[in-house]
Length: 109
Image (tube, rainbow, N blue to C red; front, side, top):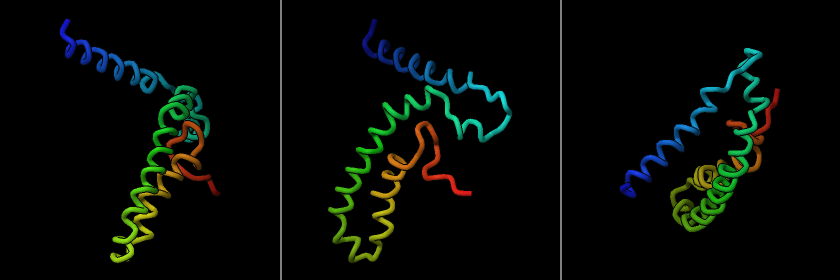
């Protein structure tokens, strides 16, 4: 079999299998907040093994980019916006978000 076709088949099967839990997930209580308060196990595992390391790497790279761009952002007067976008938002998503949740930050009533 052609290597390109093999790779295409593997990618198609992977994405197909990854989408199955999304379609199969049911919310027995009917409460839309149920999925946010208690994410399923596969979401927690994917978050722990894939998303968190990528977000931590994005925070480190964003910090480096922020430091390199600091002289230009000082001249432009948008240091706060650059820091928020490059460092705070990825850091907040990596360290403040609950495991498996899609929204960052603590819930405050």
